[in-house]
Image 1 (cartoon, rainbow, N blue to C red):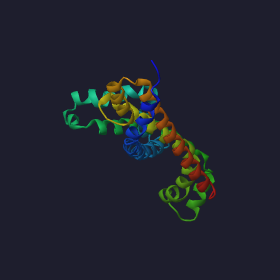
Image 2 (spheres, one colour):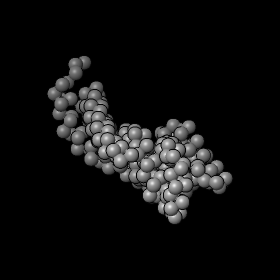
Image 3 (cartoon, rainbow, N blue to C red):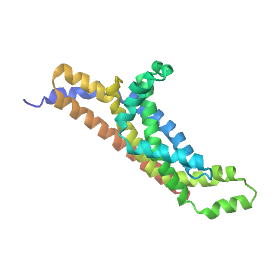
Length: 221
């Protein structure tokens, strides 16, 4: 069986149409994961035993189990016992599952960023009249974000790639569209190579933008 180069080239315009949708899914999931990750990092640093226990249990579960099982539990399993979840769309389940999975890794990235900030800065901020909330919001977190930026960028890239699992629950994103096309044409190699190249280019662009952002923010350190 010969490689159909013409079909391979023609796949790009058809598949690129799904790139904005893939970016949308990944970006929404990243924003949610970042919020959850910050809360988990704060809970892990809390003096409250229950908050620390819950955050550690959450991180342990989502870091230790395959993502695909988490997606299937959320979309196929939980609606069987929680009837209100039966109205949840596949798109929503994909975004939520990616967010919950990635937030466990992001929380560790943020916690590492917080530990990189000199503790003396918190004491200095309090000594000039700030409370702890103001000190963290205005001084500690902005610096921790800079330290955590490379890790956050890698998490975003990983989340964009995780959207490809959406085809398993019926979300027609980039990989799903390639799968549909290959099933019709039987040009499996050409279709999957095309989608692989598109993902590759997407990740290169995201990595480039990440490095540019890192250069900008590190100037202020």
